[in-house]
Length: 132
Image 1: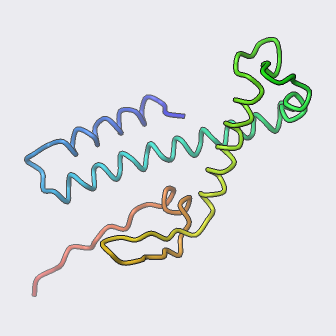
Image 2: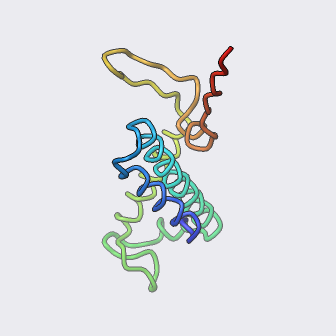
């Protein structure tokens, strides 16, 4: 989940991305860093939901719940909604571990890294060119 420190980092990076005095590359990089922090938070949140799901015996509760009813007396979402969201989270986790390929600037690019690896890695930083 997003704690206060992460939220502040995201807000600061987003402000940097909106600063018109920065170069386009600096603005883009600030956006990338902000979104990576948000995506890491989403990944962590979905992992927490899955761990809770596994530890709380909710698969059994889902099987026992009546159609159109919540999983237990404390719930509000219907059995069907819970199942749809669980499938969404599982599909997202599967996508995170699937090879990445997309068409970019008219060219198909296949990455050797999965989305999860890209989201959790530290971006490569160019080394300054030293003059002779």
